[in-house]
Length: 128
Image (cartoon, rainbow, N blue to C red; front, side, top):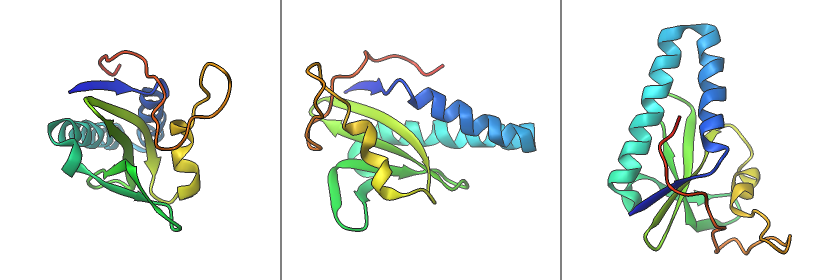
């Protein structure tokens, strides 16, 4: 399976890691470990690592979330054919209606893609 990361995915990780680093270096290290663990679980078994996204008004089966252990965050990802796409690291207390915005990126004509379609992604690569 090919793996792709939204350009903001590593920025999400670094931003929240920096917030934990303000509290303590070991806490930031534990957070990053929890993120890496969730990414590893998802890569190993994308269909069972997370559960469908529930926005409160509907269940979005095209998008899944994998909860971090010991931290109030989850990773938002999708599987489309042979492509695993990591999109966001999101605090669990955030508004569910904002979670799917990265899956509705404009296409080349400037219009939004349907929710069930995944936009083209940057090539696979390691996280910084």
